[in-house]
Structures are given as structure tokens and as C-alpha cells.
Length: 334
Image (cartoon, rainbow, N blue to C red; front, side):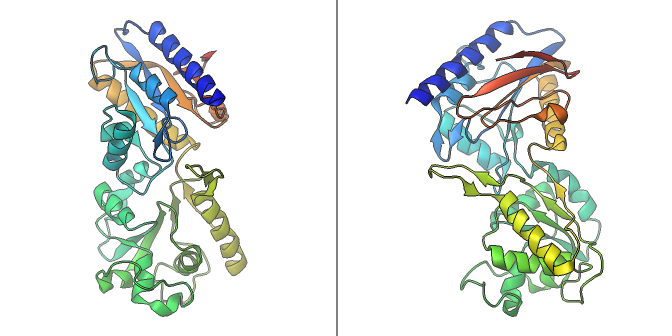
């Protein structure tokens, strides 16, 4: 209760300061806002009142529309942006559109055209079944779940296959060459998926052929977080923990480090991606540019070394904000 009270007062003070500072929109430029979701607006499926009130303070008077460009940046995933927007909208009682949401794997949609060029290959998704549908929504034409290899070839992982797991698919897809692996959400079976990923990433993409001396199949990882929080009183392992285990096994198996490309916070590319969308949103609202970007979050970061125009300064359980102008000069700490 004391922490909640402190958090509420801090968020109200932050919201009041921001709204007073920009009570009149600038003609040529406008402030932008980037909110984390987990630990700021919600904890698991429970809304956080202080975060909800901060959002409401940014609405137009008597309206459900934001008066400034607002984006929501989270390392969660495994769902579509539409599903996440609907979920947060219901929990916070505020209308959020899908194009305001950036999930850990949202930037992957820009890669669809590259991996659709060959009709004789597939991409492999790691996570729950919904990840294949997410990939399809991004434009990937041939995406399968890593589970499907185990379904079609039970002897691949004889000790970890669970009866009735997965859904039947076109068996011919599992025989195509793998062009890339996308770790989009939490593995549902670490032992099975690590075995299969070593088979795939240790090959030339033809999974059932002898191992290749070099890694030629790229691995894309959506979320670097080692743990996440929900209603349980202790943190739970996230994708970063699974990646750590995969790296250790891959190194022991092949004698060389695993190569991969990382998305998600706190990587610079993720912030640059949301900044571009925030600018597009500002222009759609009639503004030429972003003057300042405000970030709000819940875990202490030091991203000043990573980017020039967005800062998310976080300290749990009190939510702080930090304002930067677009040249990277700090304006003030709230």
C-alpha cells in the first residue's frame, strides 16, 4: 500500500508536469510518449492504477483520444499487436489501437519479403502455436512451428515429446530447407527445442542431412529478458534464460559460439523502430516533428549509451520519466 501510494503520487506528479509543460501544442513539433506495459500499466492481468491515471492525463479533455502521439513498447509477444492492444485497452479502460503497440517481435515484419523470395524454404518459429499466425500476419508465407518437426519425426526427441502436443500440418513443409529461425516467444519444451534447434542451426538448412561445419541458418531472437514478472511473488524465466541454455549446449555440441540477431529492449534498433512509428503518428496528427520524447518504465536502465532521442529511466517500484530532445541533450529528470 505504501509503495502503491508513492508510485501513484510520483506518476500523478509526472503526468501533471508533462501536461502543464505542453498544455498548448507547438505548431511545428510536439512531444511524444513511449510507455512500457508490464510493470507500468499492468502486472500480469492486474492494472496498475498509477499508470492508468498517467495515460488518462494525456487524453483530450472529455475525449478518449490522446492529444499527443503515444506508443506502447513491450518485450512481451506471442500474440498480435491487435490482441495486445485489446488486452491493455480493457485492463486500463483506454482505447489503444494496434498501430500504437510495438511487441518484441514487431520489427520482424520488415523481414518477410526477404524470406519469401524462395519457394523451397520455410522459416521456423519457436513459441506457442499462435506465433505461426503472427508470422503469417507479418507477411511470411511459409512459417512452421518447431513442434511440427517433433510431430512428424517423433524419434528426433524421443524423451521430450508430449502426447497430443501440437496440431497436424502439411508434412511436406517440414521437409523444406530452413532459411531462418525466429525465437518469437517462450519455448514450451526446453529440452526438445534445444535439441531441434541444434539440429537446425548446425545444418545447412536441410535438417536431416549431416551437420555443417559453419552456422549458415540465421537465428533471430525477439526478447532478451532473462526473467519477467507476473502475479507470482518471484520472477519467472523468460526467453533470455532459454537463449542462455541454448548457447551453452550449442557451444558444447559444436565447439563454437552460437550466432544470433537480437531484437527487443534495450537494443538500439528497437528504440529506433518505435521512434519512427512515433514520428509517423505525430505527422498523422498534423505535426511536422517530435520535439521531445518521454519514456516511462519500471526497471532501471542506462540506455543513454544506446540511443540519441528516447530514454527510459526506470526504478522499481516507483515509475520515473526522463526527457530528451532529439539531439540527445537531457532536458530534465522527473
